[in-house]
Length: 307
Image (cartoon, rainbow, N blue to C red; front, side):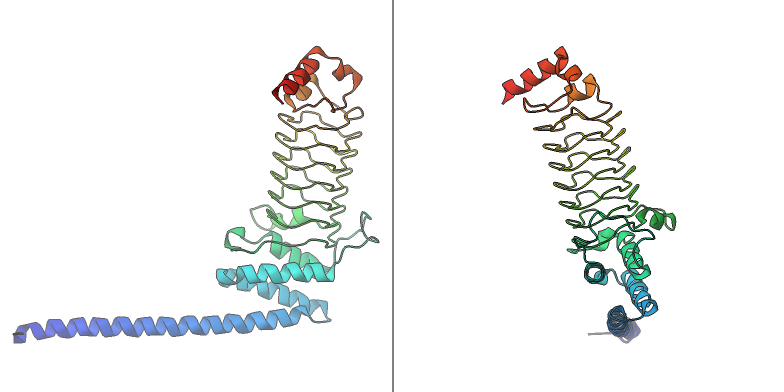
């Protein structure tokens, strides 16, 4: 039997439950309203990307950036849309491949690349930056991170067959990126993170990899003619069949670097210590001064026995 004195307590509990349900309903209503607004904003932004006017396209790009900031669940969609926008509007072709272009890409393409490179990749979900076969020549990626305190992030990006000629990617995060058959000719990769990047058959001629981290990178059959690899970390990298004529290895870490069929006769600044630390093969072609060195010969014999 419920006493009269306990009734106020029950009333208070009922009032609390009612208040909670009311607040929850209001919260759900607000959330649905916000999602509806984001959907409308997204639709308008994508519509603006198709405009013939560059100012309108820029508005659409920055609207999508704001949507990523306001709704992390929509970031994966925005990354895919902006990646497609760059690919469709900048197709790489034989005509542009490896040719220098002053001034960088058009302003709307530069804006889309900046939004993609400066996003928070932790919110990407299953999406990734996909710029394969795009023409991004002379893009100054390094200028993007002067606005915020973090480097451009293109880790795990698909950049195969992308033309990056003359671009500045110094300090950029390209860890695990796919650069196979890309054209990063004359690109500044100073201090860049290229750990485990896949770059077979890429054109790295005259590139600057000073202090870059290329640990475990796949660089087989790449063109590294006149490239600077000064103080770069190439430990565990694969340089099999790479063209390293006139490339500088001054201070580079070549520990366990694979040099199968690699012709080093015209490479510069190589030392006995570097060569001995590398993974040599009988097919590795060395300058006479290094090939005749007893330490180098012993290292080749040692590795041959392990096979």
